[in-house]
Image 1 (tube, helix red, strand yellow):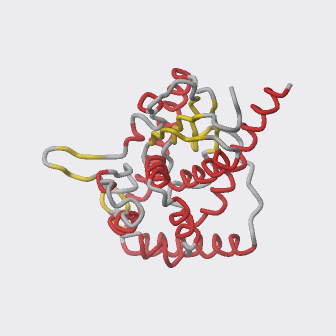
Image 2 (image 1 turned 90 degrees about the vertical axis):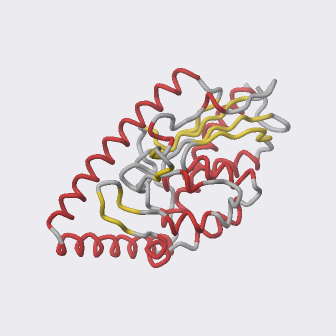
Length: 265
């Protein structure tokens, strides 16, 4: 197995909300080392990053995500407090169309976080519920190797170094989140009950998705597995974009250098 040069890669990117921003760092490291990505399959955020990369607009998306601060995040989030989800997601999806105009990303919704989308007699939700690492769907070529990236791995979190600006951005965002939840709790007792319900269901789905992904990885045994801790951030922590990109890059470097050292020896 080659580690540089013209080695073809069938890349599989998992879902994971904001954790999926780590895929950008992984892709950048693969390109830096000379790998040739010949096919991509992804779920949820993984499909978005993969689609944007295939469209040649990953740098533009990265630059935009890096500009997100507390104000921009909250202007993009259209809150709704129903039993279907916390956010409608329409503003975010509209913005995403700037980068993937030919992909019907409005057909995606994250259970308990984004409200599902109704189409005729169907209710559409995020593919991560059943297949968060779609290894069976990536197109293979002779001589390629499958690299699967799991951003929901049950591994210890090793935080990358953060700039002073990134730390300030996080503190401001946490303050805004706290103010939002405090307002909801003051306005309605049922709202507080719903928040507790969403938290429980979201954690349950998160755990279920992680365990199913582990089974898929064992079943398909990708030649290379790059793992990012599920503790790196929450699914909606897009203000941690820089940190997530670096987490993905660091995870990729560790795995790819291990492969290279093994081949040299």
